Image (cartoon, rainbow, N blue to C red):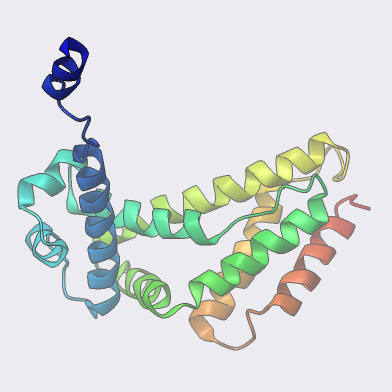
Length: 204
């Protein structure tokens, strides 16, 4: 009998929902920031607008980010991290093809494409967006450079291969075609670009 009372006296363990609420709010803020940036057409995106669109208080935004620029940078970087990847096969050419192809594909999705075009267009007259553009592109180049460095360590690139120059060639093709639209950003282009870069730099 005492065992039954003890069991009844012990409250049922409830799942901790605070973490889930925080994760949901964090995701809502990032999604709102990216959407507002995509739809802004040059109009400054404010912390107030991000909080309102995300359905949270302004202080919730400031809990995780010190400034509007930090939120926008995280939103762009988060989306890129979700969408752009290499399969990690251990073969540089295969991984590079996948990285470039997913970069091309992700950048052409509606919200991401609009956001990137807004930042690129307005960076010339808005110092905050210019800094956002520099930080975002630097982060993407770092991710690509790490992939290339692993390939060089495995001997798939020449020991003196200029990884920064290779990264510049990848993103040079991307931004030139993305902004001017003179050529395709498709899987075939990604494959040919990856092949040319690995073959021309000591790859197999």
